[in-house]
Length: 291
Image (tube, rainbow, N blue to C red; front, top):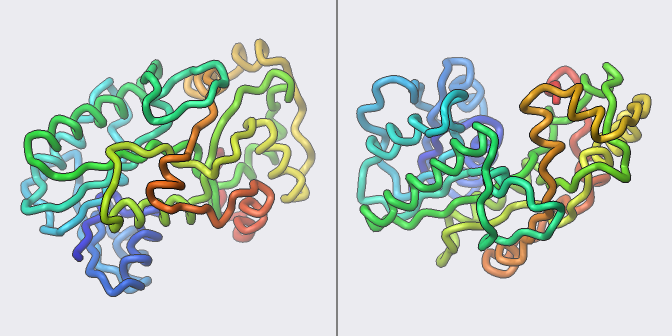
């Protein structure tokens, strides 16, 4: 098997390492020379390519993983349009990392892969457009496509250290909406399963199977990082004080069902417990993102 990873950042690099360990050839598409050097340091092959420019052709591979997000403007994923046009065939399978945000708000209800899509934010609308493009492309080409609807990703370099240090408030627990998350190492394992399984479904919900609230997540991180507990405010106050993108997260509440992922692909998370996952992610604080 040969693998092409388009948008080979943190998650893609972890998948590439799994491919390397399995003795499979892998090429990662990155945007910058620095990203290419990071992959090379792990013994991985990288190609530098601007997906917003002229993408004539991409390296040939049996299977493709697309981690590259849509552009930041508009309601369509024009970047994916160029990628799909540049892919060389024959190609056996394409796996795409989408977002559970395409479901929109379901009032805290449990959501499986058959649930209605209710995207409202520009970001979610672009992802929904990408999923539609992939469905049409799959029908036209006959290539098997798998869409992974992924919630918040956490892990090393992805903990809200700066946010907690700044003392930004969180929503009171009784009012905090439901949310879902997955450790980046577990996400990489899901990607590998979707790429290599004999049979796959067109869509999988991806999470650790333990929904909680963002408030619980921040409080857990604060405790394990030995940082002050953030102040708590009412939901209405949070909606007024947050920016448009952040406010969209607190207005949406859903719990992801992952039965299809567990039973169909045999996935069991390494980090099903938030405490274990955050503890395993502690380390180089200088790499932590401002989340």
